[in-house]
Image 1 (tube, rainbow, N blue to C red):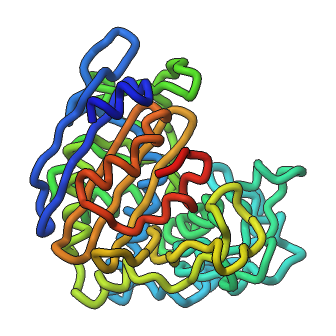
Image 2 (cartoon, rainbow, N blue to C red):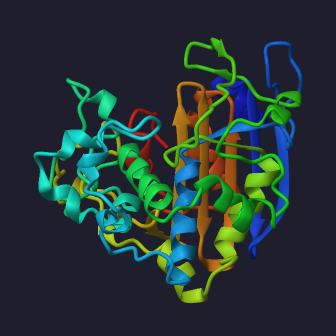
Length: 350
């Protein structure tokens, strides 16, 4: 960890290990802000797209209770046709889909294995309009917009609050007092700011809306607890837990970003497939799964192996730390088979 910080210039780095579904070790290194206050295991950090893994696990738990059908269209959860809702603040402009009936077939599973056909976000489209680029369910194309659709179905269709459900099912029972999908002023007492590729500091974003695509704040201690619960199958049957991390959609692109890339030749594709909010892979130690979290000042990764229920969780408030992730995961777990060239194609040799 210390060498990784020296070589990358990362200001803060936190790591936890899990064995047999239990947290075995955790430690934080470096600082959390420009003043030099130390990063600790209880510092609130931005979880970014690790949120998607938690939402995927929640969906699998709901499915195990027959409260969510992963293969029933989200449209069937809603009392009105999706485009009729128009531009809904905090969600998306569903009215953009009025001329394309394919919205009718998108299911929770398609959202969670990133096969909705949406771009990552509608605001990234040249005209800022939401559209479907390929037939839903046919191929992988990472999409936060899809996660927003699932959240809309859960909240407007099933009448549930995503934040309240996650707190009730997981965060509160597991003692995760410093984890939330919406900003909590109590977090300000021990909060991590972030550093970008140029070493410029940016203050922590106090996200005022719950976003299934990535609004979670958490700590190393809290999310290690959640990761351990996920790998051991907390709160659901063995079969449902296996389904959470079982890949159901082969990935056919050479890299994850930018999204909507064309299919790569078979030799350039990763040995990986999309599961429920995570990526499944096979390697020297058998089946595993992973999820990353990234923005301009955030670098996170969670890698878990089914054999031995072993994981490593790495959180950083400095995006430059990503360059060290392959070596850090290898040091913690050995050779795993994580498809790094697909996830981090811009990094040097791994």
